[in-house]
Image (tube, rainbow, N blue to C red):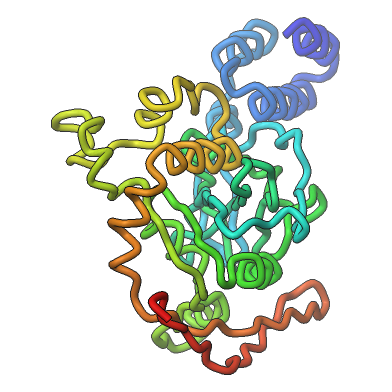
Length: 322
């Protein structure tokens, strides 16, 4: 705040119209970097310069999307980039059972994948990356409070990978493995997004998407009957949150600071291993027929992403009793 105050003192000596414009720029950058200091920044602004109506629009941090629509970005969406760069895929760390966690964002094509992390049976990180989307996909909110993703994280120059590339990695990493989730419904939905159809629906006539299928066996710690005793009455609807399970079963506090999908995946694996036999017995009987995946060929043309989906030979599932 001292640096901001010194800057405002300096521009106060300049012509009034120039000083106001500079002060607005200073305040905008300060709010973006330190959203929790918005009140102090505003106070500094009016201390050195007369009030101006244009500051209101400056403080709201509005931005215009590529499709021409105006939307407001939440202050936390502009938090500093995550300190860890994308990791993997480390195929040599893969085990028969892995845990996966996804963080999601809101866009003009619906809910999309923002970050995905995979850990092996020993809680070692196999894969961890933020996700980048090409135009005309517009990220309206990263849901920072619940996802831990900032707008900086999903920029390509900061290491985010194109969704099509991430999806192809997931297909390969998860094939023929047992994947442990906490709430598979939400994660699998964004993992299997038909991005090509989503983009077509923005630019032209709408058509039904064809989600990408994955070939793996799933376990879900959210729906395991043995964990229902930990659900908070009236809040969890007999389905305990991962935070509650980690606290009660692992003696570990998670989601205390910036949300991390790696931390959540490690907690999911830890919770699963405490009831591994019971979960396998209960949910192994509910396995449906595996569907063969599709190969996603990624072509980058002038900064855009093109996908070519080639169906693979249908997988043959051997019954366990043979």
